[in-house]
Length: 407
Image (cartoon, rainbow, N blue to C red; front, side, top):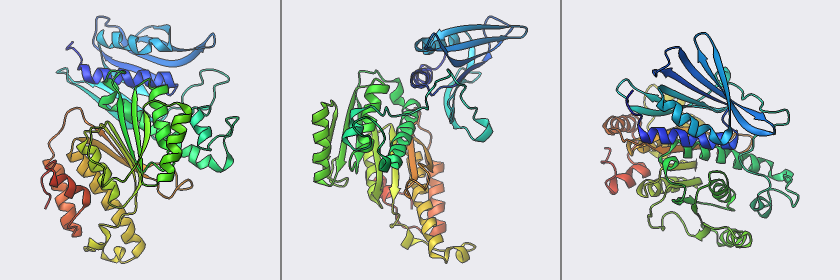
């Protein structure tokens, strides 16, 4: 068998290790076996609790028999490395919402793909024990949550902060999955992960990402929250000092005036109108592996829009025109990021009952860039159809030569 692609394998194993450690992995499957045992068909694993400790139970499925072996959870990733080397061409990790697949072609070329599970396709994770608690992505006993007023002194949720607590957990879940899919997962744990959070506000997500990197992913972190309001910057830096947090600070300033710098993760939630484009541009220029933004307002494109036939009767209604402007703005942003070498998703962040600013753009750097010509042609056609003359992110990327001007 051709030796596996090291980068794809390491990223997959890092994702497995993180999900197993966090208790969010609920099934592992190794398939397409081409090794020395002709009767072996596949290998399947699931989490169990033995003597009060987390373990995984693995079943070797042969044509006429099954063999079961249990391993401590901490040994799963290392065991997978050995089993894959013995002849399994495909490996699948299942979480409650996603399937991560490591696949090898006949020529030995490896690829890593992540798919979202929907409905009945997503199997519910089996209970590992009778008293298993609901999975939380943020530990409610962390001191920063008390300082920010999310939890009271006894680490009980403050009722008025229930929606914010849900938003924090969902964001950290998305970030954690993106981290596992990104080139950052294969980096040495001692190499700091540089995070820039534009429009950090009171720092709920900034503190949570810093905590997740250090406490859960066991990574060194250099996290900076940037915020215009000086009182919030002072408040957050005060919390950092009181808790003695290393690798976290808050700076006063705005996106437009901050010089570009090398970063690994760019976050921008609810940056208004073209401020989202400025933040994305900073992330691209800084070489970020992960871009996470939740846009707010879409004012630039709306006055440019034509109502081309046959959409004219639909877009005569202002509410529809506004929705169309939002869809086009974020769709073009996603395409532009694809042209810059990212795999990009646009999806609902949290439900509308929690916030009306619920759309998220997530972009994860591809290990190997693909030609951008086809994507740029798609952007040209969309602009031509709707009469769009200018889009801020495109203008910024073209100005610094990242992409050619899309006329």
